[in-house]
Every structure is written in C-alpha cells, then in structure tokens.
Amino acid sequence: MSGVSVEASRTLLYGVGLGPGDPDYMTVRARDIILKADRLVHFCKRGRRGNARVTADAIIAPDPAREIELAFPVTIEVPVEDEGYTGPIAAFYDEAAEQLAGEMAEGRSVAVLCDGDPFFYGSFMHLWRRLAHRFPTEVVPGVTGMAGAWSRADAPISWGDDVMTVVPGTLAEGELTRRLADTDAAVIMKLGRNLPKVRRALQAAGLINRAIYVERATMAGQVVTRLAEKPDDEAPYFSMILVPGEGRRL
Image 1 (tube, rainbow, N blue to C red):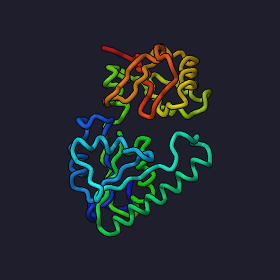
Image 2 (image 1 turned 30 degrees about the horizontal axis):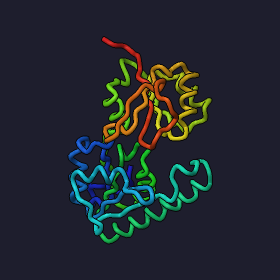
Image 3 (image 1 turned 45 degrees about the vertical axis):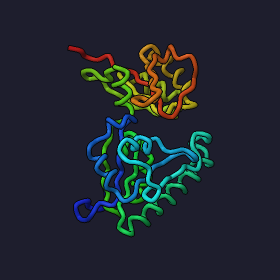
Image 4 (image 1 turned 60 degrees about the horizontal axis):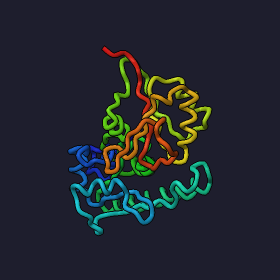
C-alpha cells in the first residue's frame, strides 16, 4: 500500500490500466482519469508511440502540451539479465520518477497509461515503488492481457479446482518444464526470443497439444492458433501461450 492516504489530499499520481488493447474494455474510471488528469504519461520504444497511448486515442486526441513520453533506452535487443539492460533501465526509471515528481510538486496530477493492469508485470510498478510513498496515489485496475487472450481464444482457463500458474518465458528451460508439469492450467508470458525454449518445455511437460498461441489479443492483427500448428518461432511483445485446465465440469 502507498504510504500516503489518498483521502488525505488530492490524488496526484495515477496508474491507469487500459486493458488488453481494445478500448471498449477500458473501465469508466480509467476514462474519467484520462479526461481530467493534468499530464498523460506513456511508456514507449524510441521513435514509436506506446500501445497504451494508442488505446487512449479512442477517447482523447494527442495534446503535446499535456503529454509526457517515457522512451525506454533499451528494450528486447539486450537480454534482461545483462548489466547492459539493468543499469540503463534502472537509471531510466530513476530519471522518469524525478521528472514526474517535478510535475506533482507543482500540484499537477499525472496519469501513467498502462497496458493491461498496472500491477501485473507492468512498467508502472517501478515508478510506483519510487513515488507512491511521496505523493497521493491511486492505481486503477485494468482487464489483463491474459483475460483478453482467453476470451478471444474461446478457451476457459480454469475449471473446478484447477490451479492456474502464470509463468514468465524468461525462466530457465528446466524450471519452465517443472512448473508447467506441476500445474493444471497455465499462462506463459514474455515470449519473444524465448518461444523455442517454451515450446520445448511444453513438449517435455506433455502439454504441447493443449497449448494455444495468442498474439495481439483484442487488437488489430489478432492471431489465435494451436501452438503445435504455429510454423515459426516469431513472437512479438503482445503475445502469450494459454494452457487451459481440464478440471471438473458439471
């Protein structure tokens, strides 16, 4: 929890979950905050608009005077375990947090637009850790990407007493295999260059024929296919694998 009571004073920092990509899945609360906040903030890759900001286009036009773009210094071109990634990214979050702190110190409210839910593998969490104890904060939950994926794949993920595990594809292959073999249902995130390894882990866990690959769920260009039928190992940022459970059905 934030160290500052939201009720004690005007909220200045918002982490706004915009859902899986289709703006129709945005909550009423998210829309209200986007319309009223003094500053709109979004993460992006250099030279590109962030997906969350594109989602917000459905309700608000671009306004350079109101917007703050936070461009990552590195993304998928450097492995996350390398110092060439962790060092620059940590410094980036430090600098971004101080930039937003400057805005809030002047009494301006800041809404950080987030894909999915802000507290589920979200970049906003790194700002929250640096700022929520300093400024009144509200986190607005959003429909997760995985919820959008299993809905569009027409794949109920958990039945009866099924245990569902969310697994990052960045884990070592042996650990991936162990966790997949020990669960009833799974969602595998962070694919990218990890897809070949994830495919092998699913095969070893005996789950390859239940695995569903979903790309850009709820967005333009959506792809849903059985992983066993996917002919290549290409997996963009907005992709995941679902392994539906087979639990009690009445």
